Length: 334
Image (cartoon, rainbow, N blue to C red; front, top):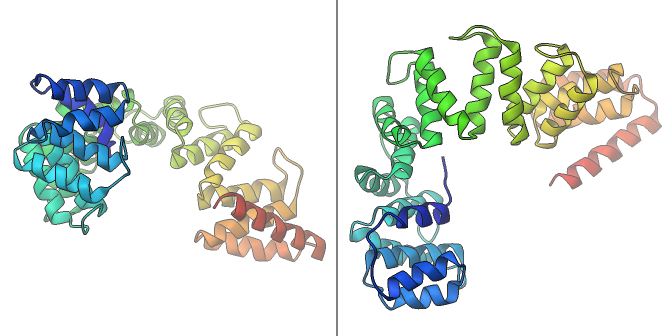
């Protein structure tokens, strides 16, 4: 649900009424990444809400000056108190992250609500997320639907995904898989990985749509390519089992390893099986033991049983090799 303060600021500032002289110079300098001159120009019109918001951004991001969350907070507060919705949104983020101020979800929700009421899609999306999770406000699915709906109508991809999720689960609205599919598809078309994964799940399970493994694989591939670990693991399973695609042990191994590298216990467990059975690889008990040991550290109790079983088949040298590989893997993935 997070969007870079820098991106949100630059895009939204273009819609504000232009100010003559130093403010316009500051915007131009900022766009050309001449941050020192931008700070100087904005400082000359420091009573202007838009300039104050830019100054808050620049101190928060360390642009043209050392990063200083305290000063960023101060400038955002000045701008937000004048009604600048970008500053209100970014000020809310600072309260969420505890940057320059103690973390305070209630204050964060108040500032997001002010920006959302002005129609700022990023704030509407975040406020919907806060209502969904009960962060700083009482959990309220109807309010989550309302604010995510406002943001989704403006094309905000995270809000479109969240709205789809609520329609899929019947949270705050009557369950409606067709509307879930519609909102997921809108978000996925913008590259939202979790929406792409969710579409994959719908087509894989046939929940609300016709069962279609090939479409499931297509959406999993899009999400997996962006590094979404659940999609990587599910894609590996499809190649492992030959579902919606020709069985391909090498591609299964590839995607399991991608997911396992992110600490996914299921992928690590499955890699243990592959190496223990020699599926598409040379049978290697030390490698199987390594993956089961790693999966166990991530909470997979089945991996613990398999690790104990394979240990009975291993030589002391193989066990020592597995332990060495586990140590190397942990060191490389810190």
